Length: 135
Image 1 (tube, one colour):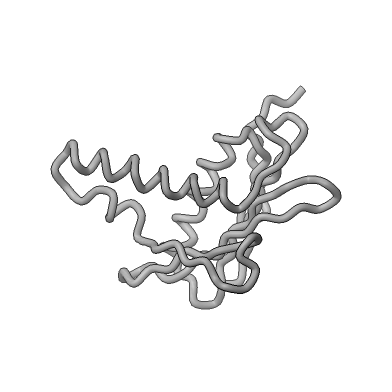
Image 2: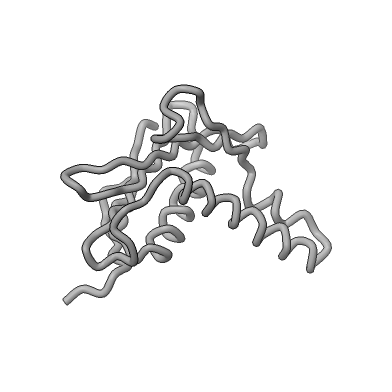
């Protein structure tokens, strides 16, 4: 598959800089929120909506991590934070082992993060979605 999607923080975004810890916090809050919903409806909703474990490799700890799953239909999504010319971005990478389930989850996360930060999202199919007010 080998595809990338990026969430770019632009001047109109709610913040101009981001680090890997903030992105990890997003996933932890996402898990907590869905676990609370599951508790309310008495079903394992949290486990069904987030099929991954967060894995931080020993190398490049401050730049990227990946979401790894053992559930059928899901495998791995790479998540990284970097900057080009002072513009920060979050990148979701799908490798050769990634599945369509991974791609759909990565798209969901891109949309949620784009909305949260009022950012510009470049999807896997090279389409762009603007979550910030444009003039």
